[in-house]
Image 1 (cartoon, rainbow over the protein chains, first blue to last red):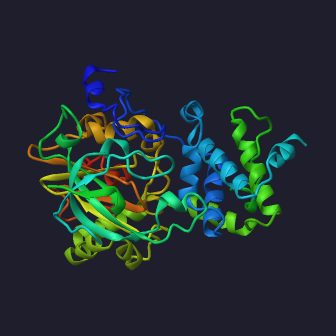
Image 2: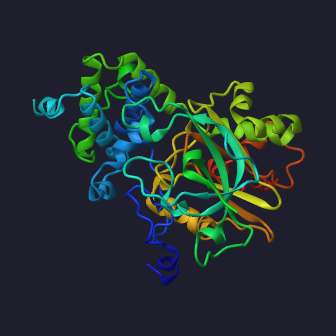
Image 3: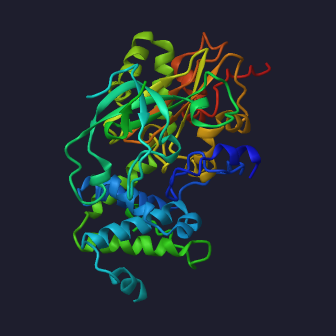
Length: 107
Length: 93
Length: 212
């Protein structure tokens, strides 16, 4: 981290892990792109459908993502964060029963 | 609608636990109202199973980059625009 | 359930090699939600179809039309959502879409520092870099360095205006029409408008003449 970016960052304002504007970094932007895998398209579409159906809204999705433990947020991929959020929010709402998805995967 | 285009405002510097859409780098910063948007459900409650009502006024606020960052490495004319909810804005000189 | 299922093709991998653990979990989640009646299978499949058919060609049509039709440009700048509907384009679920016009003195660049808000109905899904932490961090604090990394040379006297999509408004940049395109028809103009130029990290260029 350069002295310049450190000077710009104001440590007096607290921020959560998702709140990245001006976060000190000199990391170059990796411009490589990938076509969405079918599981990523599916995750996006599940969220869109849950929204259309009034089950979960986009503010809840964002809140769910922001509730990830910071270390998990940093290492998870984009749609892995969405998965975490949907499981968290839907379990909170009682739409999913805690453990039932794990049980299904175990069979 | 409390503010009008051209009015000088300051983004509140308060702490907020939980979901909110005011970025840390703008808290406490001074800007100018650029546009008055429509009203929207409050994400701070809408994110927690509530209906987000009453809708809150949303504003497009313009900031001089040199007012946001110490030693901003760009032009004095560079600007940062962000959408900020009315309850995060205060009147400023 | 996958985007290919309803076409009768099974593209499930023979092994789990190359797929993260989340992939199976997401498929299982989808099946579970459909079985429980939380969402409808057809609704999900329609949503998949919608997502994979989104493309920046739609946004490019808005830009090209605004380049050739000054009255349309005024309508586009006043209400991009309505302008998209005028061209039979789907502006997406966001209630407000705003077009930001680049001029001789202002260059716009869009970012979502808090997550990844993006006009995907008009541009297709966002590129990975747009959603990345380095872009979200640096675009607001040092946009000119980011533009330089993307190979954008701004003319003297051009100011940079970064727009952080912090709420539910979606922003689309209207890049400047390149010089030397005066005789091009609208469809060829649209082909010059790249996705990146509508985010604000590229500038459209006139096509290079092909040697006879």
